[in-house]
Length: 182
Image 1 (cartoon, rainbow, N blue to C red):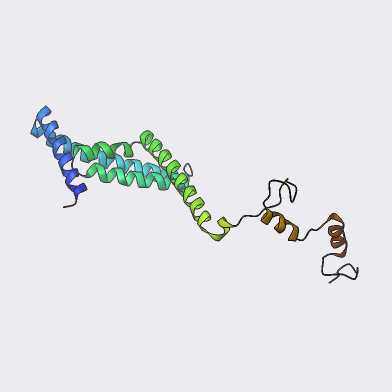
Image 2 (image 1 turned 135 degrees about the vertical axis):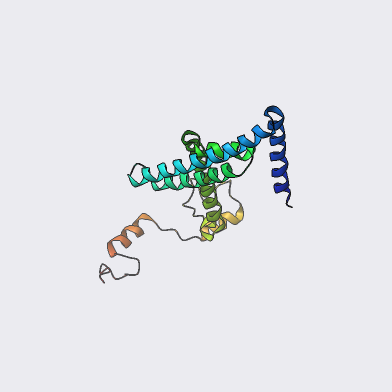
């Protein structure tokens, strides 16, 4: 038997023992039965209401999907016999607590998706590509090493007159001044 399942049985048994000690075994069994029926009925009615709201256009698809998932989870936890599962499932069934839980889960899911997107982008070659558009330092200044100075001197320099010439010729490949008509 897996450890989480064993822990679940131990927690439920302890909860039943404490409730049975407080109100009696018969009343504790009746309370579990009532919680199961009330939780299942409340979840069914809430799901029906959420579906009717969506059919009437009073709800968005995202809200309906979130409510449906939370209601099914709440229904499942409510109909499983036990006090702890019922106490976890009932907040998922009732509207105000379900709205709070849905908003918190939406916020966490959105943050997780955004973080995943950033990590995936940074792992791709596009995330590694960096472009330098120049700097405000003088080439060959005192803060550059000799290797940087020689590299800066080897780079081709395009001045404003050459750019103007290219613009008027419609491209650098046209050297005879015909305007680069194609």
